[in-house]
Image 1 (cartoon, each protein chain N blue to C red):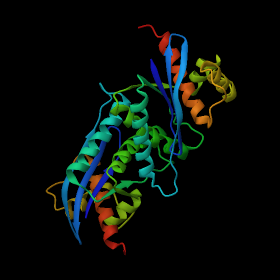
Image 2 (cartoon, chains in turn purple, orange):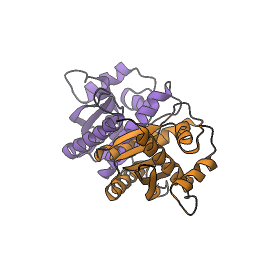
Image 3 (cartoon, rainbow over the protein chains, first blue to last red):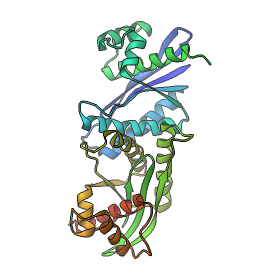
Image 4 (tube, each protein chain N blue to C red):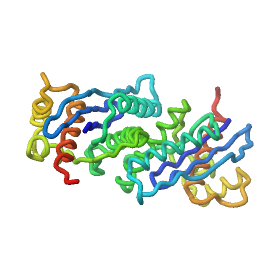
Length: 162
Length: 162
């Protein structure tokens, strides 16, 4: 099964596609979708995010999408609102590809990868590197976060009784 | 000039297309894009919102889009976050049609239509009916809000020195 993990943001959306066969998980493709406020309107940035994800889905053909839950009680409401716009543009692209979406809390991703919901970003990154047998930690952190989501989703689905 | 006003919401997005020639403004088309949590996932709802606006733009061919500003300090953060998702899906459709977007505060729409930023919803609705020479107030209120945005935008552009 191929899972696309998405870490949404207007400025830099991380994405990571992995393939799982039983307990074996391998990296297919990962990267970021970046947009800039320089020379782009907010609207064209959202359009680019939508277009880019459509292209990524077409190229990598995932079976399922994993994305982080949004919480209303964020530290910065403005950042949350920006992120929700990006999420709306991204999920519209996912809908166009008829893919199911699984939402995960940050805590459940940490628990799935590092065994504890209180694990540090570094511990999660280390597990991403180990599970995908990477030479180094993917950069920027948005990519690692997206891959962690995809891995958590693949594990959870592996466990799900059908 | 044709202006498309949009009042975004996941459940019921109001839209209204008007055409202005100098001070004369007429209604082209207005309505709502509705989605339901029954039998639809949040993702497919956002996909439908995006698709529907694409179809509306294609059918009505506006020159400009007017949308209300979002404020981080809303009464209900959860509602604001839902609305921001709808806005993201809608603006991605607007970007695909290469249309410019003008944002208005609720206050500036009221001022443009009823002469005061403190005008009531009813006063604004009455002005929408009068300006567009409608037989009655459009229902639901989302449609009136979208038309008010479009009228405010047409007025402002009419006044704008080029």
